[in-house]
Length: 572
Image (cartoon, rainbow, N blue to C red):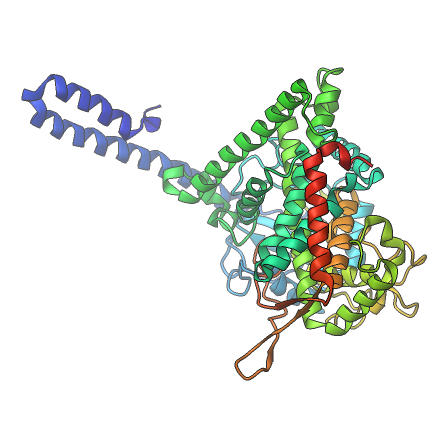
């Protein structure tokens, strides 16, 4: 236990002793320095020893065990490692590894699937749509778990982050809870929260058109906070937490995600561990505090009529452990549903804005469709979806052209598997590289080109009927496949449909101009390096269409009046 003694504690004790024994102060000062040096040396010795033992085991496993295939089976082919055990580092940058893996997977010798070693672990990369279905859907029983995120210890096992949890009973129960609350919201058209918040979004965009990047996340955060806790008051805190959480689970984030062994070091030897711990502490305080707040509001009779938190607490009044989990797990189940719905929707929404600037002809086509269906006297509603075919096609194509999770979220293989004579060992980490899937020419001809017509014209392989329902995001590989499909796809569809349709009705999005009046289009693929994201902030001119400013102000006044009247008015 000596390694856990803090130097500050020793200093406090010595200071107190010196005060009472002033004559011995000089001698004690010398002893103080000796104690501090000894403690520091001891901590470094323990940390180094733990690290050395871990490295030793990993090296032994790599050279003497190393996922050797059984007799009669072969090891999957793949690019050679730059360095043994460490992996291929010279041409796989952490900022945007999906580009490199797409190129590798397109090589004839791999034909859409390849294996590599990263820090002694086998990683299997899939870039073929049919292969992804074979593994992740047809063999979902053994390909539906998650590996631990090295920088976030316990991400798979502590029952805190539903999208990152391994496949166990806690994951099943949290999925059931998510399905319950999201289905109820879907059936009530999200209680009017989406159209309510888009009115505020349009007003804020009218006041400060240059703040478009932050406003997209804020729109998603306010809806998500209302869904979770019945109020948008905590939206900023959730956006901040999401903004720190997503980089921490990304290859471009803490160095521990690139070199997992560094996660075995003590915190004082790997400062990135401290940042993760501090964020998680604030996150726990936020999520548990909001649950307590809703509980108190229910006792006082002032709680919003609907929220994820209220649903859990009402069920708890008649069951000891609703959905099989306690208050602690419930706080995380709800907090994660709120958090994950910010950037997974905000990223595609911001990508839509970029796409409209780069493709003004489609912006005008969509606007004309919305005007013919909705007009200019109200915002787009979820119920308008069947008639907004072009809008849905453009949204669907935006996500294909610029996938929001280009690397995909990794899976963990739970049993040894065989595929076409190749051996894939238990514990292998499986990546369905979504950028590569979205560039599969057999599924998406002319894949590099933005072509919304591929979803609404019969000659394209992606065409589906009826057009009152298709195209849509449900079933899209961008939101996972098989048992790990995102449970919030319908919410994503609703928020994007309402926001994207209303934005093009109210504003013209166009490139900025230089000093000579020449248009300067934004870069078409300057995206965040995070696992989940979208375009980095870019410059564009946001010009309100004639006659729309007054209508936007009226929508905002109406929404403010509704909010002042109380949450009950949102119920459909």
